[in-house]
Picture 1 (cartoon, rainbow, N blue to C red):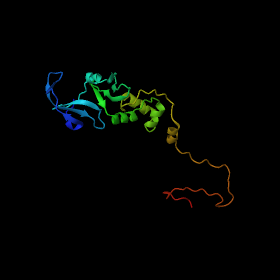
Picture 2 (cartoon, rainbow, N blue to C red; picture 1 turned 120 degrees about the vertical axis):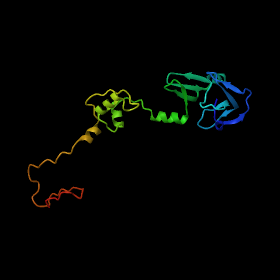
Picture 3 (tube, rainbow, N blue to C red; picture 1 turned 180 degrees about the vertical axis):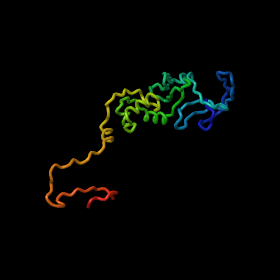
Picture 4 (cartoon, helix red, strand yellow; picture 1 turned 180 degrees about the horizontal axis):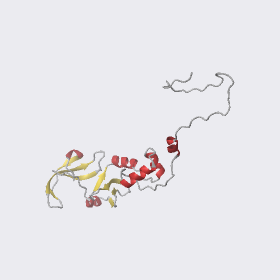
Length: 198
């Protein structure tokens, strides 16, 4: 059942005039048509019900036309006799199973990460200090961050290089030149704020 006519094609009149819901409420059936718009599940004989705010799919009617419906705790899948998944969806927090479009499924699959290795999460979080990651875990500050096992002293090389400070040039023990401008050191930066001796 659907409440918006623009998603249906080949809309025709339907013999029964009303549909009765589980709570006893009745709504008028305006017509019946086929759901064939791109991005929506392809379904035939979809009822157009006046004033319907949420679209509904009947599991028993799907089974009657030969489709297989499989419900698990996190999701549901509707597949044809060849095993091809036609419709899939996820379970919401309030225990409703909601259809997910192919585009949304593709995006969520691309963004989904099941990697629990601390080194990879350290890199993803722009080399965030391990203590900060531990604090984010305990306060649940980052949504979707898996329960990582943080071991002290496990720091990546790039992080160490980024935190290093430049050491001064060591002094020479003996004079390496015998005359002026025999050895010339140049800084390829500038202009310098402090004037040199020369």
